[in-house]
Image (cartoon, rainbow, N blue to C red; front, side, top):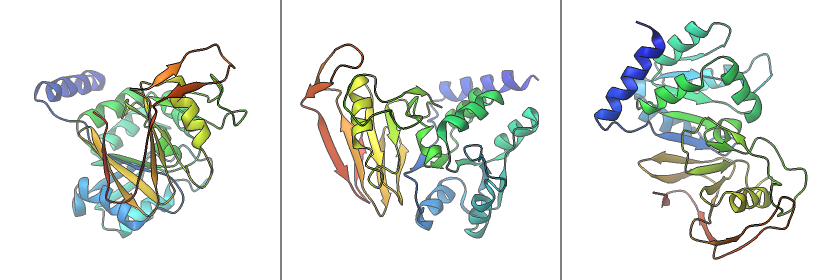
Length: 263
């Protein structure tokens, strides 16, 4: 049977049975605590976990190898790098896995490489089938449906200043930003939310993660998570390059153990 047809049939069957998409472990970059990696292992099978590492955000020759070694050291049954030189083999390795992990680098490069390999729909289907996905830094940003691919030209609150491009869309209600505290990215995420107030901005600090499932997330790790929610705010619409403005914007600052429900 054609693989695309089979994937479509599986997703349809799961949707009819009410299956939920897999949980997400979204890390803000920096040094990732072992507890965060263990969380991904626990929700993807424990000692039976099989982790597919997609390291295409990086251009380094040894990309992905440290992630493979780390997951094996923590007790995964198997961990391996998925390369994109053979589409059928890549899909087979993704299908075999009980979880997918994206290391850091450039989120724009990562999305471009996945797209060129023809794996966007396949990865989305695997997530919808229920398997967990995780990622750090660029691997976190790409999980948004509308993704911040790079820094804006200027640090200003002006309409259209924060660049936006398509991401994987694994959590379409959120727009994610990483290294949030260490790299002072409040203005770019706030500007992105003011441009797109239907989305909830989530800025994740380094050594910190959110675990997303069932319309909510909890914080783990050692840093802070900042939430900018303008869904019930008054946003003043203007033309590109005009100053942004809004009122009654909700701000939440969470630490490890705290939760936020977004739907």
